[in-house]
Image 1 (tube, rainbow, N blue to C red):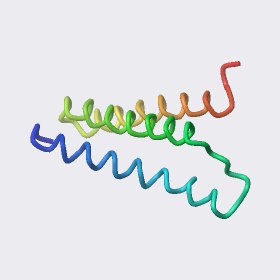
Image 2 (cartoon, one colour):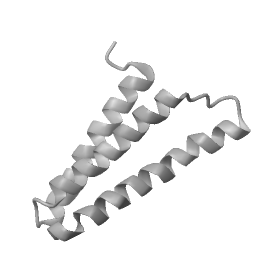
Image 3 (cartoon, rainbow, N blue to C red):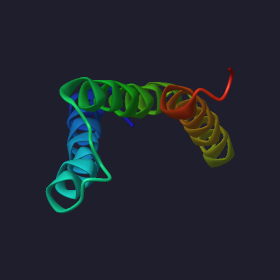
Image 4 (cartoon, one colour):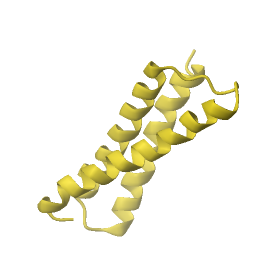
Length: 92
């Protein structure tokens, strides 16, 4: 990635975040099992966009595909850990 592509990468991260947040929004229309409030959407959006931008920034610092895969795995692990803690409190 080149420095000029950072705004494009940011736009992509925000677009994917919005698309991912459509899943619970649409589910709320069809079932009572999903009951998210605005705070839930804001927290999920911040987590997803933050993880996406963390990957973009960290992956720009490496050239090796293996290192980029490691960065992706670590970012996903951190995202899953925080998401699970917020959802069900795995550390309590």
